[in-house]
Image 1: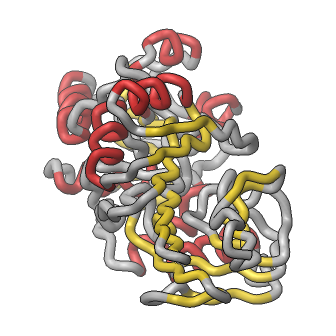
Image 2: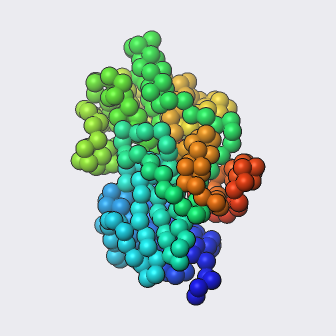
Image 3: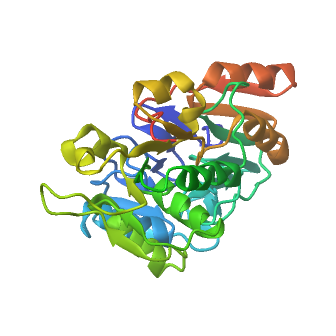
Length: 332
């Protein structure tokens, strides 16, 4: 139907009627296009999944090879019915992509989660001109301005020098953040072994297989009742609520997340060394990206929607909050 919207929000997530597919649906659907491998965007059980090769690999690692009945690698420009589809790098995690849809002279770009700060562990963000830009707003308040990640790594290295006898335990999400912190440490000149929690092993192995330099990684496993002699240990945030942490002697507790800019969150987690390292765009990068796309209309899917919608209005850009549920603040 000629006047049918190219994309619209539904209880399952964003839906393209002409193509018969959803983007990052929050429950199983017949056909899903997936922006990246984080669990709040990539779920098992869809009839068919179209995604980048790396996102498909990551979904198989996390959910098993039978996570979908059919899968297709997004390469180049594809046609799904009357709709042209192309995936573009999002700079969020390995394999992450924005999805551009075009039909009847209109182009919509769905960002998924994205970051503009360069990362050594994934492809850089690529601005895509469009008519409608569908953006996240995880850090969609003017107060959020991420420092250069190299500065945060310098703080970590300074702490290692100041406390050489204390192991540094760093909380980092298993997909993306852990590998980014490790790669940044290598770029910062740290060439010693880094110990990792078992929950990170398979994804770290996959990043290394894809050419991401993570250096020497060792398992952070020790016999019960003994202490592990390690300078840097990286684990998922959930591990810090377990007795696993008690195996380390007087550790420096660190956490890598954009939310560490909120000092109250750091205190609540018992974090001694908050590292403001985020895989999401901050306020300046959210607004810059909207300008870079040249979009005349902006939809905000999740996060701090109202402030970004207000900024668009003040700058003469039509905008609406979608208030999609099922996409989480953590990790960031």
